[in-house]
Image 1: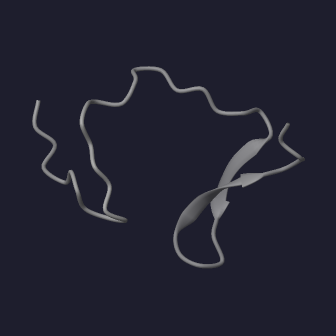
Image 2 (image 1 turned 135 degrees about the vertical axis):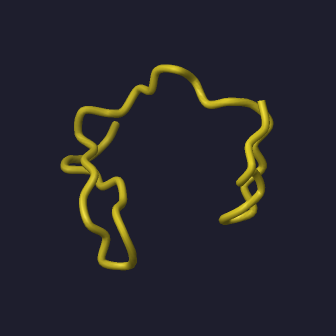
Length: 47
């Protein structure tokens, strides 16, 4: 499978497809970033 945008943005190197399932900590939310767009933010300390 080809990834047409591999290598774009922050010099990312994509060697393989991401996993089909994704584990996200329960204290992480997606919200508007003060810098640009949306981002991941912790709602509590992550241990």
